[in-house]
Image 1 (cartoon, one colour):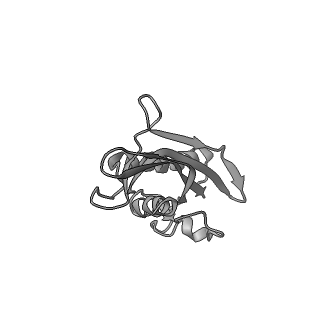
Image 2 (image 1 turned 180 degrees about the vertical axis):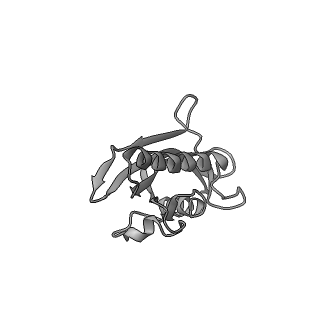
Image 3 (image 1 turned 120 degrees about the vertical axis):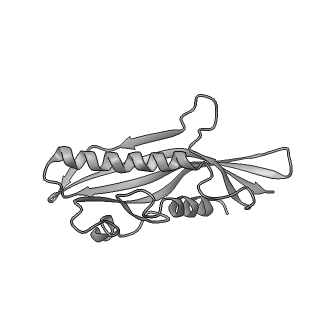
Length: 167
């Protein structure tokens, strides 16, 4: 329940093959991610790949007046770390854009991230913002960098998550 539940639910929802190119998803930032994890669920010879993990940035709580429920709000980022062996920088940039677009599409596909209202706790909504006019999904991407022969890029796909718990 709580932050760990949100991280585990996020990680399970984005496990390969949910978003082709996102080849490994951890429940938190790994102390060490072997280079092969960037490509482990990809076809042999695939030049680019990524790993990801959820990060809970903020948390707030409020009581809901009906039925003894408590609403817990989280701002969560799915961190996507990308590596490419493409020969051209333009091709290397196209690949992470496609992966991040798939992550955003998957986030839009199920606002409950695979949980149900029958569960306690459950994700009430994700990818929907928290007020009228607030962002539903926000994506930040760092500048591409060359690391050895690879182009590396990280992105943060941010959203607001509402968890409902009996309290």
